[in-house]
Length: 516
Image 1: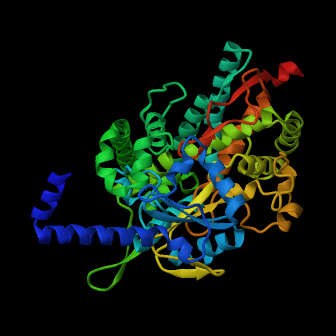
Image 2: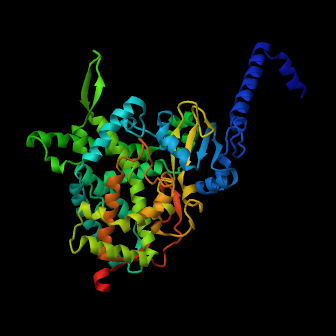
Image 3: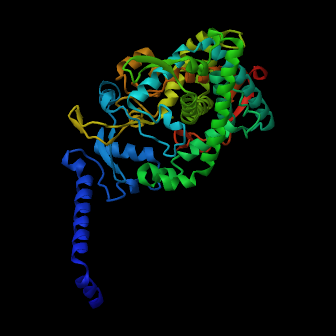
């Protein structure tokens, strides 16, 4: 003890003063940081320095924590992810203000996969401001311009192959099996073929690069991945943690090479054929022909198209960031069909009524399947692939008396609304009639946002809905979907990074014609 006291007395007084000053400043900074919600009268759990409220998620499913907090603190509360203040909203009107009316102050979407590789930094997920607006205009226009009749024809072709694979699986395991791998592979095959005429063929080859990349991307950003979790909370650690992201990085490089090759081949084909058939232009072709205005160095405005690197980035964001959600939604719907046989029969009856004996449904017929729309919506209420929407506040403002500060994350937790009896009476019951026109009119329009809302909502949601419905039509015409001994209901879920089946979806398929 005497030795330590001696060291203290002989310590350089200037250095000692600097250390004390740094300690005081650090204490002041952390104290101000972690009391910000108290000062603004925003309720929430008490944070611990450095870690914030991360400890409260230990050994718990994150969505359940948010539901518990909402019951305790109300529709608006704050918590800390490490050093970062986050405000959670479970109010449809404030959600509308954030996503639409005050979009200019919440236009940045936080990155949920912290491990970004070139050229993904050019995608809509990772850009903002004027760059994002220009790119978004071309991507949104491409989705709107795609001929849905042609898209559905492409989806039908791949769905036929899925049905054949399901038939093989049903014959091989008559007591039931997990269909998630088949659905995942079908989804990437169908999207790639319909969107950019690329034959992935992962239904036959599980080693297909695009399929492996999609799996690696989802694992890289999953809540199960501690490296990604740390990087999201402590951004300064990202360069170090990126070292552990080896498989994602490797497959990203292979995948980007394939996409670049696909784009180059398309450009060569268009030159040799002197253009494309406008009625059959796919998403990629519309991206290649799209343009936006940009001001040149001379002050004049010019139109320019997307570069190949821009296009690669946008396709990557859809494959990595969008298809996982689509996969999960189809898998969730199939599960709910297996445990609701009477509603399944109702959907089948409407398919026969609308589509008749036609083997391949048209885009208009898919639109007319209103009972299927309601069934899908109710599934996504109870099993929301996107349980929330996140934005970054870029400017201090006040909404409905709630202060928002620059730098805060804003999390609109939709899943807490979806299980609220005051919004959805008897919320635990599966009832597709909640989404009849009459019932929807009774609710706030922002109480159910399966695809987000506002300028940053999912631009491809319409195509995703076509793919889901085309898939279900093909499956239901061929099979009766039943539960089996391994079926779990309620279905356990995980965040990887979207909400998805935790242990798979086990069902039994019976040939509908033979059964009749």
